[in-house]
Length: 292
Ligand code: RIB
Ligand code: CA
Image (cartoon, rainbow, N blue to C red):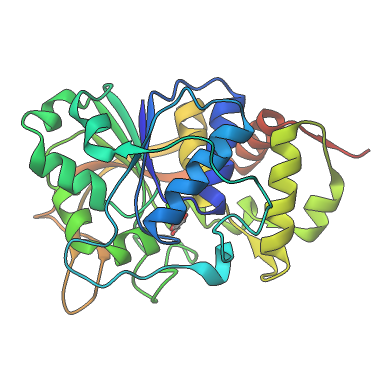
């Protein structure tokens, strides 16, 4: 599987969970999003180094969206993008991201703005027919109270940052399973200070996640780890309710709003997940024990 990401704390926690659950990650490409692409690239390499997995190649991707100005999210993820977690500087160098997309595995997961994926689809002949399953964390369909935007009232961050890329990818014909805020922003999936205090981190990934959650909870009352939900789908899709929906990405006047539209493209869209099952998969997978 190839993974396009913008670490970012929730991308990093998702990667720690995937590696802890022995999910096969053949390559990671990094994109500008939560922080600039130089930093998202460093962060992917820092987390891989921490997990002893520098065998996984990292490709450095696009420094800005296709058309719009870059919009980052340092206020949530911290100056280094990983909650000032103190991980050492990378011990490896990235390659060019298209090298990893040129001969892709059949499965991909995307947890950042879709700039890299759009450029890869436009640059590499037959890429869209090589991909058999693409899981995308992004968008907000306003189907649930928490399914509103998280950048503006209308738009989710990944689709807001690069709406043109999101439109290109969603309309490319690749088989997409979309995981929108309508699922990932569910308050029943939120980490709180009280929950964190109940948890005993028993592994290196759990200790690093504790630090990053502590950072985020120092800035907000509760934390939804959106990208972790996308990886949980990868690990056990049976926890999720999925339905086909016709959707499209609006570019103007609203930047990056995802809407249902009878003329839209037909995608598999996750509508809900069992909070109890998901939280158990995440905590057990990372190596947390609940203090009795
Ligand atoms: O809206 C949530 C998404 O935007 C997540 O992927 C988070 O990492 C940010 O990229
Ligand atoms: Ca992300």
